[in-house]
Length: 140
Image 1: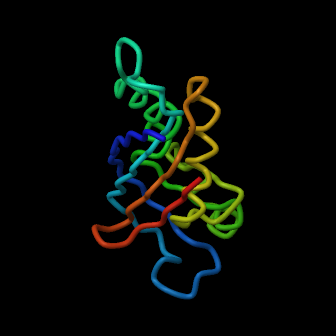
Image 2 (image 1 turned 180 degrees about the vertical axis):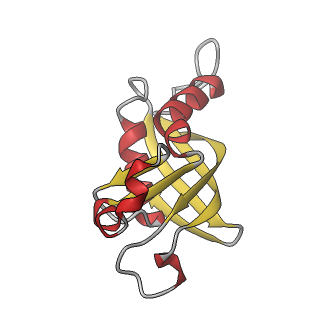
Image 3 (image 1 turned 30 degrees about the horizontal axis):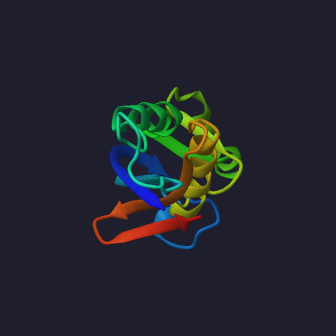
């Protein structure tokens, strides 16, 4: 298998409903997302133009599916929004069915990217850094 990875950065706020700690409050992160895709290895070399996927195409897909939706958004669960109804009027609030932990954000990101990839390209791994030294990872 041959894999390629593109790195994305975005700013997102979130809060975790039912969490007994500081993360129950609205706070933000400078997220770093590593998106790795793979394709079957050719017999010799990749035919012209010699690439698995154009990095520009991967960038467009991930920006449309994920970054443009999450960047400068406040992501909360429907349960959090019910408990904090004053947020419902904000135009940058994105509501998830689940709590927007790094783990659940990864599952949202996985589902958002998978269906948009070209035929023959598979999502292989995702790594979402909340801080410089803390990340969640999804591997196919």
